[in-house]
Image (cartoon, rainbow, N blue to C red; front, side, top):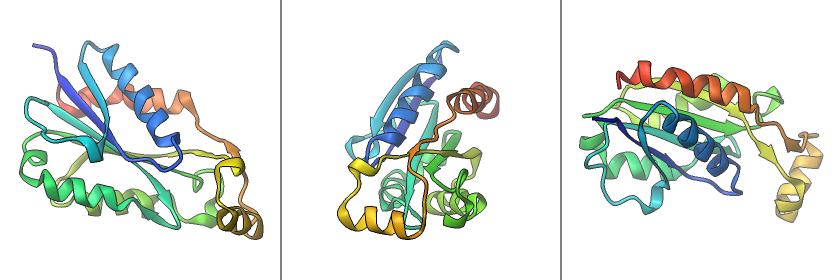
Length: 167
């Protein structure tokens, strides 16, 4: 029977959703049956043999949606292999924070679940989609804007997931 994998994400501006969709498509290439969904819309994990969780980092923190998701599905998440990814600007602009801090925040939000794989990918920071305050802070801190997603790195990480998840 084919693995059934849920790629559950939360997003603010759409970049993390696009990464989640790419991960889902790459997992389908392995023969898995994949569902990609906003984690706030998920009502059950029944039938999934693995879960991948994705979240952006904003103002130095992973989304609170992850904690809510982990709390809601605490027992079910402990029954399947779980991997996670974080998106943000830190991989290309380290002044915003250390990558290991953000991956650690994701792991902490999901505890006691142990992640079988975790990564942080550079995201997309589109100045046109930022609020006036966000644009001001971005400018003040000299944070680069643009699409920094490395699709090859995302695909390479995804290719390793089936073995790490044991599926």
